[in-house]
Length: 275
Image (cartoon, rainbow, N blue to C red; front, top):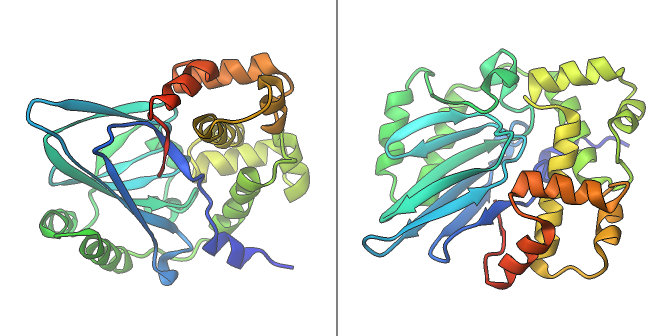
């Protein structure tokens, strides 16, 4: 059985990432076209229209993905963010992005993706200025996607077979709840620990342990927002933690509040959104 088609069609990033935001915020997503889906996960558009004088923060817990982001007339490459970050919205506006699969940006970069971690840099590919101008004038999401995909096809890189292997590993980290440690990934994919670490440093930009933990914390935030049942110890075990204190520590560090405080915030309609 081969799972290459699975990697191309199913999600390789979690469905959650926005921890809190104004009710006026709108998020739209569309999958990448099939011919781009080996490297590109989806396109997204965040838009808002706030009353004069109002400023609202949006807090995000990033995925292990590189994004091309069009914001305020500029196109930038946003590397994996290792910590949560906050974007301040005011007035009316929008941000459009192309989310690459974990490892999917490496063939475009032709260098270690870890060089982009926690960095946002201007896009310097040929025709970047024209791309920014066309995205600025695009009236809606279908038009934005058409412009972005036309540009991606014009700059499409040579095939890199390692991207498929990285995709399979990340897919397992996201979906297989029996995986709780990195050495289990090494055994499953017959990789030495140092080989796996180098692969993720070059293709993903963060460690496999970071990816595993981040996906579990995305799920934890979603479950808390939905009103999870059971004790904290049971939630911790479900997410692969050995004990409750480790889960609470990781959640608090990543999200900025304890699980109990976050659950309480969600009852005030500050639930996470898919991203």
